[in-house]
Image (cartoon, rainbow, N blue to C red):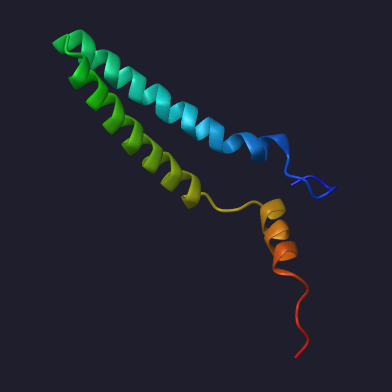
Length: 85
């Protein structure tokens, strides 16, 4: 998050990066299936399955990364001021 409260360009593009990587993996699988079988339906099914599996795995990997100090600070700011008991 940038200092003025808006998300940085990197934060905005992160979901698009994950989608692009998953689409690339799905496309690779679909092309291999198409070249192997010459059946478009099997290639599309292979693309779809590979895309979904890659998307889920990439999302799980992204969630498993420990947050940086900036992210921890941002989370604390979003939680609001600490309550005085």
